[in-house]
Length: 68
Image (cartoon, rainbow, N blue to C red; front, side, top):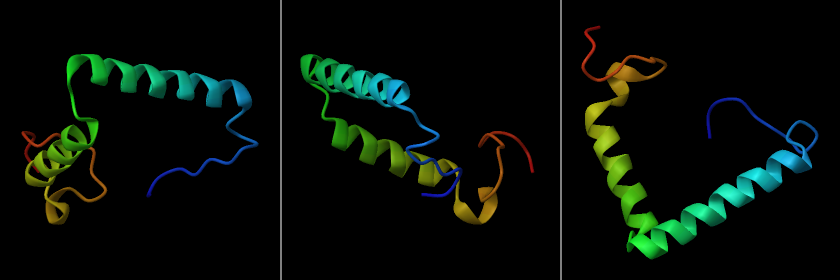
């Protein structure tokens, strides 16, 4: 994955536990709402690929509706 890298020394136990709590809550919420997280993520990645073609947006923080 591109972007900043983190290791266990930077990301302490407290942050790991908080992220684990968020993940568990998300999984439970999705289950109760009948949302397939894998499908939702796949659909979002496909939508983003259409909205943000690599050849036009690599390295950019522009929104898809902002002119170049």
